[in-house]
Structure formats: structure tokens, C-alpha cells
Image 1 (cartoon, rainbow, N blue to C red):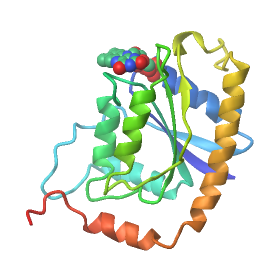
Image 2 (image 1 turned 120 degrees about the vertical axis):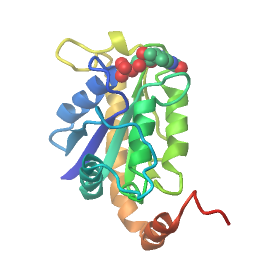
Image 3 (image 1 turned 135 degrees about the vertical axis):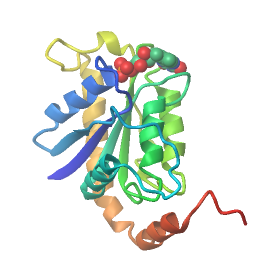
Length: 203
Ligand SMILES: Cc1cc2nc3c(=O)[nH]c(=O)nc-3n(C[C@H](O)[C@H](O)[C@H](O)COP(=O)(O)O)c2cc1C
């Protein structure tokens, strides 16, 4: 059974993205484990000169490294991803590289009808950056619009079509994770390049 890490792209306690990942954790419990990684309370990224990340970031990175994949559910703030998610990703790519070659599935929920489509597009670009280099599942979007009215009281999704879409995408993600294991010819080079990469080089 695959072991996944789930990251909610907000620290709002009432988050509907958190509700979505919590639903997925329960709904897919017989197929995979999804452990939610808490990104609340992280310090603002401040580019420490010695590249020493806080202990908690190191622990988060170790959990991501050990996982078969990561599922990120992001809200959309001002047409992009929330600052807390960017902050966590900046820490998780500063001298450490837990996302390199890691399969990632993106989902998102928003109060409006668009379901975080722009934020998801931005997140793909971010996760493709030289020190993240994740393997993002292609041609897939799970957009949960009108997210305030889309859950039943027990946390399940009201719309059967949405559940069917999520079932399909999750099954695809499991296949994608298996396929990714075969996309291993540049794995070590990817890791080395991420390690050697620096935005601070002046030449
Ligand atoms: C500062 C701010 C900016 C927002 N910008 C957008 C936006 O650009 N597009 C959108 O669909 N919703 C936007 N929203 C509404 C969010 O979809 C909604 O507040 C919520 O964050 C959805 O995710 P959550 O329930 O997990 O918190 C914005 C909300 C806030 C607080």
C-alpha cells in the first residue's frame, strides 16, 4: 500500500482544502495511507546564510523523502497559492531536496466556482523549479468549486460526479507513482543537479 503525505496549502482552521484531504484520507483508506503534514507555525523563510533549516523543516523533509508521493490541496489567494504554502516550499527547497523525483498530485478547493484553477497552474510551475523538481501528475486537475456548500456534515462530498472524478484521478495517481519508479534513468542526476544548483552563484 502506498504511503502518501498530504499538504493543505493553508493554515486556516476552517479550511475546505483540509476537509477535502481529510475526506480523501478516509475515502481511500483501503488503498493508501495519507498523513497530513502540518505547515502551521513555520517561521517566515529568511534565507539563513548557513543554509541551516529549522529542525522541524528537516523532520518534514524526512517524511516527504520517505513517502511514495505527496498530495497538495491548495486554495487560491489573489490568483496564486497562499503565502504559507510558498513559505513551506521555500524552506523545503533551501539546501534540502525532498521533492526531487517525488510524484505529486494537486487538488484544490475554493469558495467560488473556479476551484483554484489558477493557483494549481502556479503550483505546477513552482514544483518544477530547479530545487523542487517534483514529478507532477500531468493532465489532471481536481477543482472543487463552491467548497463551502459541497460537503455533507460527515465530511463526505455531496456530488457523486465529483467523487467519481476524484476516484479516477486517485487511481491514476497510484498508476503514476508506479510508472514514476520506471522513470529512473536521470534520478541521480536530477538529485545531483538540485544539490549543486544555486540561485546565489554570481557567474
Ligand atoms: C486573501 C484572499 C484572496 C483570495 N483570492 C481568491 C482568488 O483569487 N480566487 C478564488 O477563487 N478565491 C479566492 N479567495 C477565496 C478562497 O477561495 C477561499 O477564501 C478559501 O481560501 C478556500 O480555501 P480554504 O477553504 O481551504 O481556506 C481568496 C480569499 C482570500 C482570503
